[in-house]
Image 1: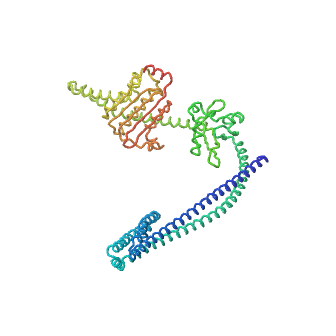
Image 2 (image 1 turned 30 degrees about the horizontal axis):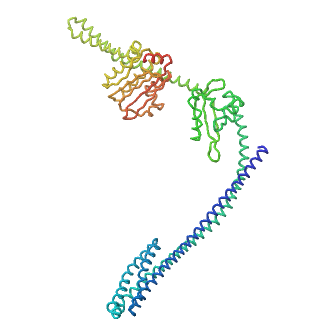
Image 3 (image 1 turned 90 degrees about the vertical axis):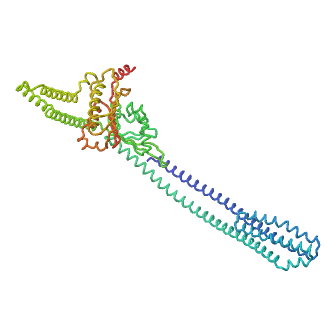
Length: 577
């Protein structure tokens, strides 16, 4: 790392530390200001609690005073009998209802006080009724009648009950205020403890930030040294193309191996997009963008594919692309490693060709053995019987027509068997009438033997297809129908043949028992069941693709697509038109 780089790194570190400290201090001040605002709200709420309690206590005192006025006004009227002495009594009766209503409103959020207010109303009714009775008794019966009610003790008892309810309400309201103030004090203590903890945390955070900055600066220095070592190492590697890309896919670094494998000098590709290494068809399909997107999404992308050198030649490569991310997880670029596997692929293809040739020879020998057995067991026996019949007719010319008829049946059976063997080897109809009629013939033959219900779409092809395409398609169809007859137990079979813009397509499906496809794809099973392998290989030999879809109890569907040359497609398109 140069001195300038070191100064820049150090300056950046100091700026980061200053910014971090400023942010931490700002957050702390903001929290402190918010805390002070909260304290002011708490103080206001506490003041509201005190004011509310004083209002409740004042209303209780007013209610108590009105009760005393009711009692004193009634007492004065009993003594004097003058109507004007009833004014305090009547004013107190009118005011006491408003006092109770006000108490109900002030204590609406306190169930205990609401219950006491209800008790107050319950006790107030009888007391006001007894006061009214005393006044009425004084008016009608004189002082003695009123005194009798007073001396009964009931009004005094009612007054005592009302005083008890009001006293209970005053005590409850004072208790609620004490609880609220205690909670307020606890919250304030918690707040100031939090402020102290926050200040301590700020100091700790600043200390941690400082230590982190020191570590970051050391890590940056180590990273720069590591990058220098990495570049020195990659430049010395010639077996692998190692390069760095930016987030958009432009080449940033280029090692000796990349120059050897791809043929470009560093000055020719640094700053250029890496899509130039893809084949034209991959570029048109958007493959470069998909590679980067997959690497960014999954953390790694690996594949084997064709790539292009500077001179336009293609090579088979294994490619690994991995994203590089910053501390926030954002993709800042990609690392890409490429290895030329062309020689290995050629060796694998040669080995595969040898294995295929061996399997084909083995299949041919197996077919020859099968035909030899059938010729010996079926045709040989039929010819032997015919010879015996002819010998018997020679010795007994007058044996009758029955022997001749039996001989004709044996001859017909031998002819049919030989014709069946000929059809299996190479149906003449494929050469004489074409693919559709040949498939129709073998389908009808298998359907009669197996009792299938058949669905077929076999359009007449105006022009003959290339011989290798017709042969491959016919053999695949024949093998699929043979497998269905032998193993599936199907009752319905469909065969669909068509030519479209993508080539020749064949589909053979049945409603049989199906099978586990994965089981038959192991090397051991592939050696035992050459039919499935032969269908795949026949399609591959003419550049086609074959897919088998099956599952136990779900039937089987074989689909094959074989490519056609442009002139073949044009001929069939013209015929269709």
